[in-house]
Amino acid sequence: MKRIKILFMMTLCLAIMCGCVSKGVKRVKYDNGLTSILRSDKNSLAASVAVYVRTGAVNEKPHQAGLSHFLEHLMFKGSKNYPGDALSRRVENMGGYINAATSSEYTMYYVDVQRDGVEDAVKMLADTMQNPLFPEDEVNRERKVVIEEIQRYSDRPFAVLDETFTENIYEKSALRNSVIGTEKVISSVPRDEIFDYYAAHYVAQNMTVVISGNFDEDKISALVGETFGKFEKKPLPEEPLLFEEAHEGKEIAKKGKVEVGYLISGFLGPDASSDDIFAADLTMQVLGGGKSSRLYRVLKEEKQIVYSINSSFQTMRGTGCVYITAVFEPENYEEIKKEISVQIQNILDNGITVEELERAKLSMKTGWSFAFEKPSNIGYAYGIWNLMGRPEIVDEFLAKMAALKVSDAQEFLKKYYNKDCVINAALLPEDK
Image 1: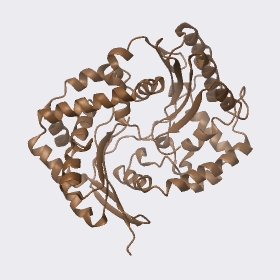
Image 2 (image 1 turned 135 degrees about the vertical axis):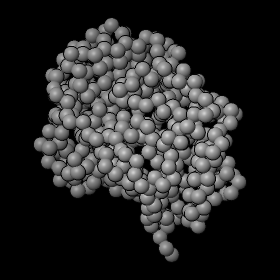
Image 3 (image 1 turned 30 degrees about the horizontal axis):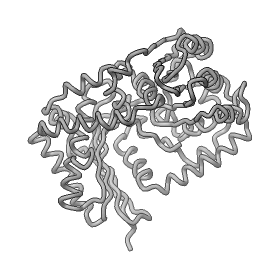
Image 4 (image 1 turned 60 degrees about the vertical axis):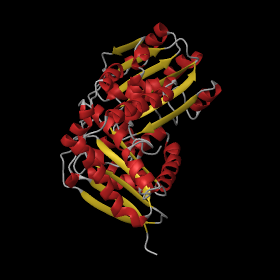
């Protein structure tokens, strides 16, 4: 799996619909520390069973770079009761879909099935989480798969640029760690170290089981307790450093085999525990969220100096950050950086309009409402916000968004933006 950004916009989509999704939600905290969240919807024909593990690239030491991602690949390669490819074949025979993903702060595993398959899905994921086998032949076979993925990753301009941007905007915190990892680690890490990493981090207190869609609540609740709820209670691993102090900005321009220029520009923002995340998302929607945004209208339509431009805010358990991305002709690079700064300063000096405020809210609400019609997406919001330590957000977000004022965008930038702390990372064509 490639690096997965925890997209704030995805989770907020469900929150906008919280008036309907908060019904029928059952949360249970087990004695072993595991949390389960069951959200029933009898109108659905499908269901999604997912396990969110609070471990990712931030938990790795330098000699383990990419181990969380590698482990994600190996977890479905056989377990005590589902050896070999028995699990994936069983899911296929049920007409279901199985997948996983790794990010900086978490790893997720999920099975989407029709409503009669939920019980099997719970049993399969429980056995996978508790009794993985990591067969030596599968470990070695998967090394090649992951290394190929790393090589393909290096062929994608924004993927390469994101690595550069991340390790510069996060100087000291573990958020700078690469999710995809390195060929050196993946090719040589011993199976014993893989298992030790799994044993240390895949503990009940780090896990959230989320089931959403159509299922028998009493039966499935009891089953989760009989499976996940019986996992042995183990101590949590040491928490990594997730918070970054503001530091001096940087200008990094690399040359590569590309035909056009690519830019990621950004600065540090609030962490998930702060209500400033709502103003951050609003501000980025006004600045660069779509064709009506300021950056698009000025840089794309008026000045015609970019092919595309966008801005967003990445919410993290630790320090979040603003991302502004652009694709352009190299000769426009300096003007683009200058114009981005001008547009941010304009909001700082003059704020945003009521029209911009309402348009941003409506745009986000509409997009999110269309996106979150699947049980898996609904479960995603509950799982991620629980891992971030704010499970109440799913029920409260609508009210918090409605309460945002025109002045909040300006106040957000006053609090977090400093032009001398901006990171600009660019990938430009090699000199001809």
